[in-house]
Amino acid sequence: MAKYVVTSQKVTVNGTDVSDACARAELVLNAAEVETTDFGSAGWTEVVGGLKSGQLTLDFHSDFGAGGVSELFQDLVGTIGTFVVIAGGTAASATTPEYTAEALINSFTPVAGAVGDLATFSVTFPTSGAVGYATA
Image (cartoon, rainbow, N blue to C red):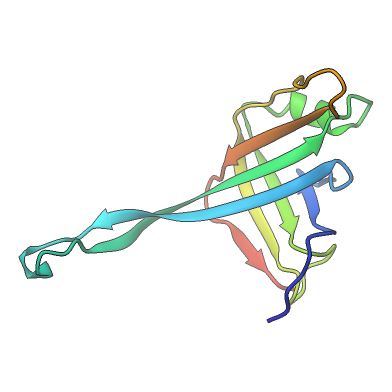
């Protein structure tokens, strides 16, 4: 398996490429722990995977211009958005998988920072439904 340095993730929100404003992308997939311990467990806890969930975190450089990423998120709060992240490239392939997720855009912090800081914002959204995975 090849190792790679993160340099060229592609990120889209509802079909809009926001890669030029995105500085970090993280998608976490989870399965709930469901306990199945019984008398045959010999004193050990036993668990199985339950419902799956995901969380998408993105860090952006603020851009308040027309068509900028800040304007994009302003109108999406409270809606379900479609997010596509291509890990390590610009097109899905065996070495640059594409993840597609519907996520609830439940918050947006348009203004944050101190004097002299680069204007940035971070968002973390829960996924809604299955997260797609493609290599072509």
